[in-house]
Length: 325
Image (tube, rainbow, N blue to C red; front, side, top):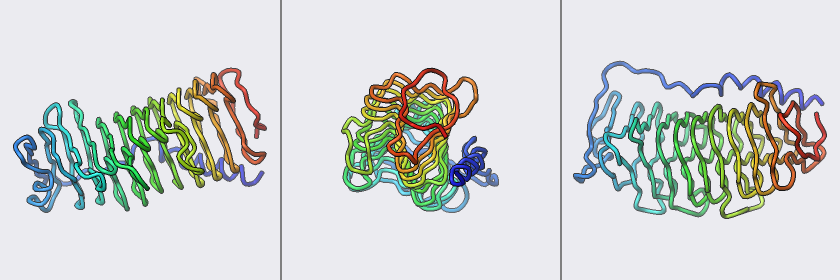
C-alpha cells in the first residue's frame, strides 16, 4: 500500500513538468540565417561548418541527400519551400543526429521530411530539441534501428504536429528521456507506435493518434505488440489521445511502470485495451470527459498479476480482470 501511494504522489509531482513542452530559451539577437539549395547540390553540413558562433537558422529548399550531425547549440532547420527534405542514403547511419542544446526542426507551413538511414531523427545525450510539423520515416533495421524518432540518454524536448508512420520498428522510442508530444500521429509502425523505456517522465498531452501499429507483431519477449509500450519503471501521461486498431494491446505496461490517463479513448485493439504487468499501475483521472476504455477484442483492462492494478473512474462499461486499487 505504501508503494502505491508513493507512485501516485511521484506521478502528480511530474504532471506540471509534462503539461507543456520543454522550453528552449531565447538567445541574443546575434543570429545568422542561410538558405541552402539542396536542389543545387548544396548541403546542410556545409552550412554548419561555414557558420560558426552564435545562433544559426538554415532554410532548406529541395531534398538534401545527406546524413547530418548537429554538434553545436542554437541551430534551427526550417523548410524554405514545399518539398523540403533530408534523406539519408546509408542504412547504417542515422539521417539526422542531434548532440547539442536548443535545437529546432520546424517544417513551418510546408512541412519538413526526414527519411532513410538507420533511424530518421536521433536526439541523444544531454541534448534538447523541439520538432514541429515534420514527418519521419526510417529505413534501417537491427538493434536500435528502423525508428522514426529516437530520444535517448537523458535527452529532452517536444514533438508537435509530426507524423512518424510506417517505420520498420517504432514510430518514436524514448529511452531515458523527457519528451512532450502534441498533435502528432504514430501509425502502422512495425513494433510500437510509441515505445517508452526507463523514462523519468513522458507526456502525450493532447490530440495524438496512435493506431494500426505492430504490423510485424511481437518482436521479442520485452517488446510486446502494442500501440504504446512502457517498460522498466517508466511513467507516462496520456491526455486527449486516441489509441485504436493496433495489432495487440492498445497500451502495454511492464516493470513497475505507471500510466496516468486523462480524457483518452482506447478502443478497437486486436487484443487488450490497457494491459498491466509486473506490478504496474494505471490511474484514470476524473477530468471530463472520462477516459473510454472499451470495445477491445479480448479484455479492455487486463492485469497479468495480482500486484498490477488501476484506480479512478471510466466513462462506460468495460471488461476487466483487475482488482481496483
